[in-house]
Image (cartoon, rainbow, N blue to C red; front, side):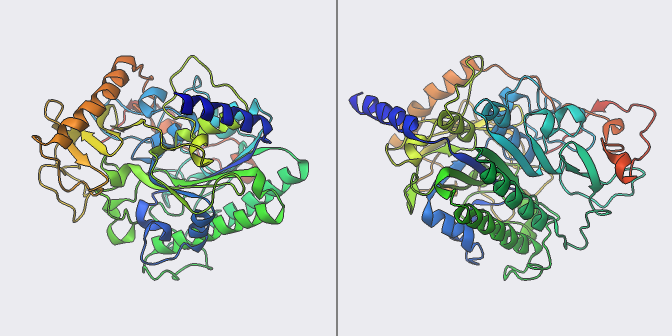
Length: 507
């Protein structure tokens, strides 16, 4: 108790003495835990990310809020699990969902997003890259707290014919300035989009540094998502022999440019930078996709490869260099930590699943015991506390190959298996690949159940689910005529009749 009191006193004194930091979140798309050299990737094609890890703190147990893009991003922006913030579906049990062009919903207006929260502390904010929290006007970034936006509300799927399906828009602030594939070309994996995203980041940082204002930069390029793309500078350069490898090299280059910009402006010691990914690498992409290292399965699943991500925190002079932390941390911790450092009180009318990890990243306290919850859609599949992970449901998929070459008997089940009355337990410090379930008569098994059960019970007893936002789809709401399309002479006819239906999620 005395240690906790002293730690709390130190943190309070430290925050009072600190200038509010600038905050940058580098959020990759479908990048796996094993895609960076700092986590052991054999290709060693991420020198800037690896340098960032050497100069900061690398987390070995850094988790996302969901194993798929949109719910993961909703968790990052709200600090709350998708089951709370509404980014899930009830159309079918335990299926993942996201925000395709046909989605009717978006992030609930009652959710307080990171830029809205930090605006209370005077922060200027910008998102660069992929939004994915709803593409209808009321859900777009400038209507949810961001001051500036360059990127797309959706992923870069296509090309489309602009008749049955519109090509996806690219926005500058609140208006469309063109579309992918026609105005912003992606041709056989060749595109200059990441370079544009880098230029936008540098410009924003320089402007804020000149104005002397604290800022939030959410830099989220989507080049790693299939179909992966890269510019001329990196096209065909990766020894991994894939466009994905090229794209990883290019976002790594972007990381280097951004960090060097902070240093050249003399604001590196005033800037807290987080690096992570929205979910694990996509196993179904095979060799064309990313690498989850020793972890089981990948994107879409609740095994470690779907939820555990690269995690690096960089803040020269405040975050000790070269430290490897085994603290269980999540992307939902970022908003809670940022609010704390900005001197902003979180609202008391909602539950936050993130915690303040400043005592950890500043090197002033040991690991904090806390749970990590693994949801797939509307079902809680697993819980981790400490070294133990307990599976209450297992499912890969009966149709899609989310775990290629990684069959584990009675674990990677193609059908949904309810294990609530007889859970599977893994000791993740010995077995991060979840290959060897702990024997049910062992002391480890009993210890795991005893440790996890109170957290599980409290979670279930206090759960208030958000209204599901990802249930309904309609062709009428697709990106036919986004705001500003008239300025670039690229408005498409909107269908006259609604086709409102339940979205057909099957993964």
